[in-house]
Length: 220
Ligand SMILES: [Zn+2]
Image (cartoon, rainbow, N blue to C red):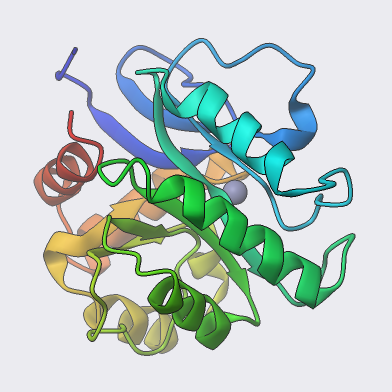
């Protein structure tokens, strides 16, 4: 695998913009009729679009099809969004648990979590489903880094953090262990370089740290 990337983007809704950029492109169930991304990708069930899932078998078949592909580096984004979804909160929880059952068959592949207004439910379900493989919390904005988990928890910082007041941003980032920080563009690829500069200059999270953490979590 090529390892001279200059930029590491742990979660994006766009393909890698150049060969210097390592990107894990999100590819979702609702796009199942579109071609699979050309580069590295993750395969997920976005909590906004779950109404097409009819049963547990749908979830299993979809994930098993892709997780065996060496270019598919993670399962996700999956999770809970109690602000917006096309199904009820209970249905979201059920589908999230189904996804985690498949994820546990691939313990080396991280899962990418989407969570809105559901932080404690996510942690509770990860605990109940005996998650031990690594977890990437995408668009991480938690005030307090959960330390008592049985899995390695990576906090992936997205450009959305730039919208918060500076003292709140710094509080969030200082609470995360340095070896568990990742950076992502999510759906705001134009903001990635501003985010990278903020992390470098204001938070003292240098490129070397991000390279090391990303390489480790995705076993590159
Ligand atoms: Zn996303």
